[in-house]
Length: 359
Image (cartoon, rainbow, N blue to C red; front, side, top):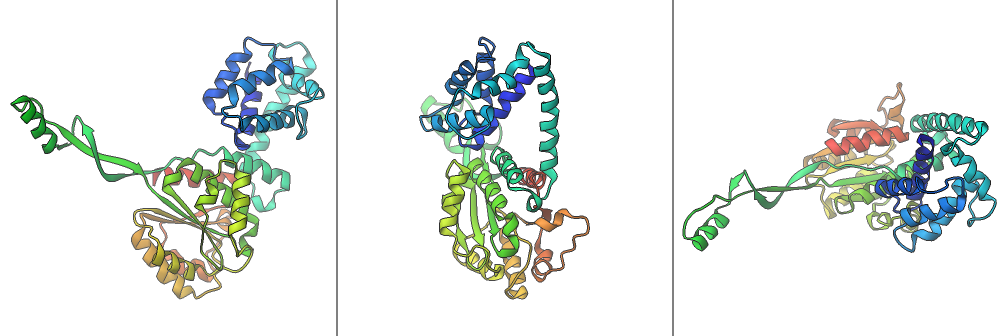
């Protein structure tokens, strides 16, 4: 049963990466359904998954492609050739063959070990296939968010005396029968993320944008994303699309300065003139190779630090033990940073997500 659960959980993760609403509850429903079915029959597995994991008609073609890719080894519609692969993945459920059981027992640890290695590997040194796997795992990242007190109130058993409600009750009942209280509500703290898309950041830009997509999907109302290079470009609306690939395609259409230089000081000046980061967590993802005036960058970083709750700089090179912030941009920004963190691997993005959840 453990092998079956591991296989189907992996399949559900593949579906979520493709944009299908195969959440934990739906995956558990699938496992319960398979308890009553012949899991060596690919047809029964296919229909059980389709009925439990899909939420809308738009999920169906994605489900078909993912089912064939996961169990059949290629991106195609469900075909007879998928039968052998499905049986191989799921035969351990009944223990009909020693060879099938051995394959599953060795495959599960190997898969887990490979995923752990990929979590810590620099994305700039990965193959296309490895980077695609990391991007699938990023799509499943559930990013929490620190909360802040809002100006709104809600009823509470304890807290500040709600005079208006107390007086209203007394007028209605003729006496003060009960004291009413209220307290401030909370809301997610806003994250303002600047993603450097200049030439020096090209190996990391796509992965950073996929991390930005995960943030936007987790808290769409409390996340704002801008690309920076030679121009400041808002890209939050494009990243709101559920499918990561489609979202990045939309971003590519609106960003005019891919693989150019970096003039972060000028862009922060433009941002602070047009927008605000008051009370937000400002996150700058860049290697600090500033082509503009470092003094201007330092001035704007000081302004940003006065507005923001925290300023976090994500540098891909920080993940290496011998890294020193020696570039002009990093030296100018460093005095105004609350955190300087790595941004070169999936594990680094997971740690950054945790930091945003508890800052």
